[in-house]
Every structure is written in structure tokens, then in C-alpha cells.
Image: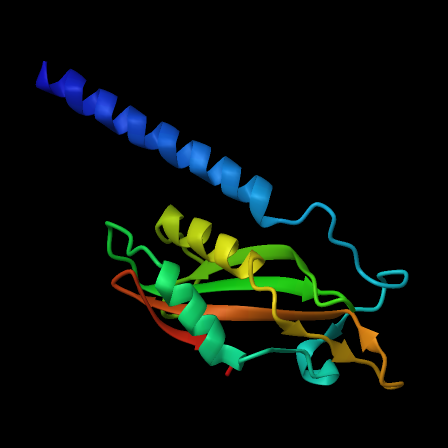
Length: 157
């Protein structure tokens, strides 16, 4: 009987995680996100001057106040790559996980869910500009160093 109860509890957790992942993936990526112009030209943040209003300190504050520490301790680096269009909208998010030696690995699923949701909600982007001084599409990333489930550092600074 005890085995059946544990199995049911485990199945409930799996279903909850699956539903949460589906909801987050459906809501975290803006389906109406469009790049400006033809969308062909997307320049790196360090060429365009793309930045976040309040910089990394505000991003860190926003993420840490929502952060729920996973039950299983994980160490590693989570990276979220994204694009910001000429209007300051964020989209086209991609997620990768690495161990502390930068070898691709898998961290706790809740880390991915939380980071993708939080990054997709960052809305205070100051758009990058092209050589003519006009707002342009940029791509950037945020890397999160995770120790024992805690966000220790966010890059780039």
C-alpha cells in the first residue's frame, strides 16, 4: 500500500511539473514578437549599446525576489539567449545549461522554468542603435551562475 501511495504522489508531481512547463513555455515566449525591418539584421548588444534600464542590478533584484530555490541542489550555469527589437520588446528566447566546467548538462527543471519566465518578463530594455543612430534589433544573453539552487551571479555585467 505504501508503494502505491508514493507512486501516486510521484505521478502528481510529474503531472504538475509538466503542466507548469507547458504553461510557462506557452506564456514565456511572446507569440506576437517581431523584429523590426526585414528582421535580417540583428546585431550583438555590445555593438548597439542595448542595455537594461537599471542595468544588471535591477535584473538581479527582479529575479531574486521571485526566485524559488529548487528542492534538489544544483550547481552550474544557465544561459538565456534572446533578441530585443527596435521597440524594446524581448523574444526568441533560447535556454542552455552547463556544469561549472562549461560542459552541457541538465539542471533542475524548475531552474529553466523560472529563468525563462523571468527573463521573458523583463520589459525595461533601452534599445540598441545602429550606425545611423536609429533603434535597431539586438541579440543578447544573460548567464546565471547557480550554486546549491541559489543565483550567485548574473552576467554580463
